[in-house]
Image (cartoon, rainbow, N blue to C red; front, top):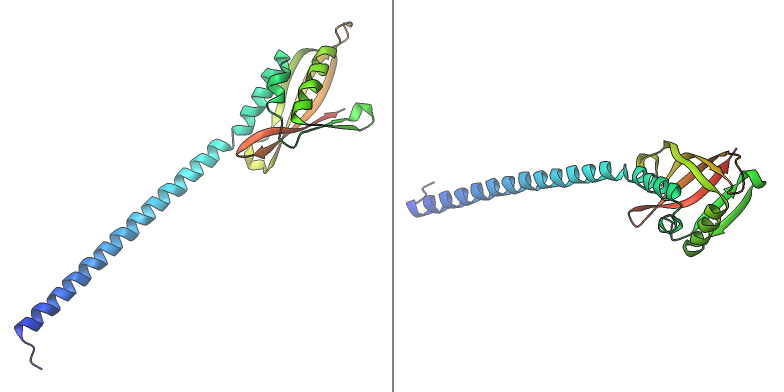
Length: 172
């Protein structure tokens, strides 16, 4: 079959355009994969940074507790409130709103002087939606020289991308 020069040129133009489109499509696909890869890498990096966030909150709890700062501790309370379980008082459970927690800590620090507060073990965010930290609190009453050692388990829960204190459990 005989094809004229004009038809050959037109066919050549179509192939060239199709080839350019294929190359352009391939470049866009590679670029998209590259950007997606970068986005995934950023998410992984951000997640790795976030996994240490609970430890930072446990550090803030330590400083606030040692300073006797009821406001600093109240600022770390989860919006659903604070649950306090005292196994020394027969499993007594108390619940405090964030604003009530301020007064809970005020009363606590008025009745006990902190000699030492430190976390011995802490989980990071890889543990899940709730992370635990075990602390030792050495304290004494203002009118006594007797030193008490209390073990506490503090539980942090995520709230709007932040870790907040939700529970304090006294253990024997």
